[in-house]
Length: 222
Image (cartoon, rainbow, N blue to C red; front, side, top):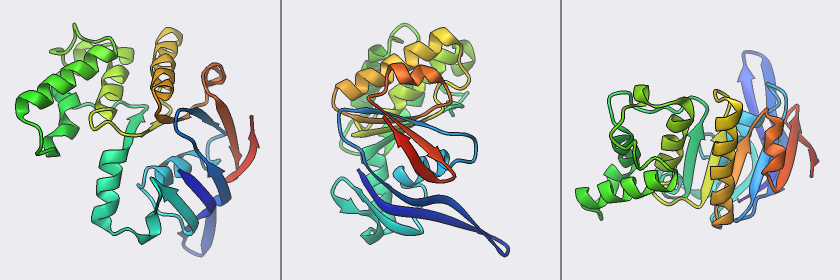
């Protein structure tokens, strides 16, 4: 993934807000990136653009060797579904579905797999995040850390190359925070590109590179 001089400008009445300004960076496969910055710095806008949830106002975004500005809405949706996995702070699990059913959700549109194959794949993903004994539990029966691991398994359902995590440990205690960061680090070691927005300094112990954003600009990297 590569951003070249990307800007995102929101218009609010007569005012223009520069959420991202001339942002350039190349993200590599097999690495875990931490993105830090104060509230309003542009972190969420960056994640939304990387995740194809928003389009840049200016500049170029190349993902999987494709310029997103040249793709139609269906091509963007397919690219998002098959290339990117999302993990959010609030899990967004369906409370009326078991852990297994939640992980199966992204697989339902995959017509090449039978229902049994989808079920087996979801079960395997839950085993990989250490929840093989909790597959029939509903979210209300799981801890916050377990819910986030279900969310990670769900994000992996279509075997995406890229994982975008927006404050994935924001609602977790210290112990579960480490478990989630370890899971994300493992994914990067397996060859995926993992990008994590986090306020926690714990990210420094896991990320290969830390990007600091201020007022929509990349001000530091290490």
